Length: 366
Image (cartoon, rainbow, N blue to C red; front, side, top):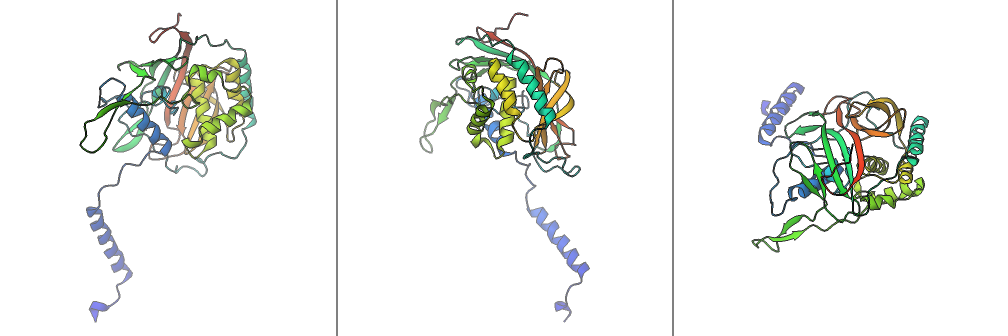
């Protein structure tokens, strides 16, 4: 009879604990949290392009974790700009898990119109951009961008994201996109940008690898050339519609996609004055954009910031208080996650110079 007697709650709890312990011994350890789809796609794309940048090189050498993208991320634009904004590395970056801070801390501000303060800052930036000098890069020249960048990374064992010191980055991009560009960072070999990259294809299992190349992507807001950016609409509404259309397949948050792309275009390209002004005015039409009274870029320059929060992260565009010039970006956690506490800086940049030059490696005169 005792063999069939009902178990007491204490006995059931103890039995369940034993069963869970036995299952834990049998199951493999939990995997490292996966990246968000946008980040995973861009990381894989950039790893492939960077690894195959040299003719005949089949395996990528280890590189610094996430060199300076828009990225982005500060940026996540496809090559050639992706190599400037999100660069291949061995780090596993901060996952966009649900923050556990105060209620509402990490929630997206989608649906709310841009705040009056943000609209004012962006309007001033548009007015300043409209009277700024026009780019002087000719059709056969190169756009030179010099910046400071730093991006936090995590290794495969997890742990909080760590932001390394900012380092200098120089980029040369063909104005019309027809010639290879160049990425230069201290301590690393120069990386070609936009060149046809070798890949190896297999016709069938056991076949000899056949060398081919990746086809060039057409210019777009996610793969911009200087010439393409110069043709963007100067009407803010039309420009925002175009950006939304060209980023439709890049993720599930159209407002954040648009905000991210505009930020990368501002940081990584050199648009004509009227186009730059339209980019600021278009950003002022994106829901959820707010103002932050004070923020610093990677060079330590303090200014006022326009921000947008999504997926537990806040993207900040920093502007000079006096001239309304775009200084740089920051990305900050808005709530405590496995990547760190609220306020942890995941990325920071500072735009130092833009100029037109004749060839990769040329630098503008001081």
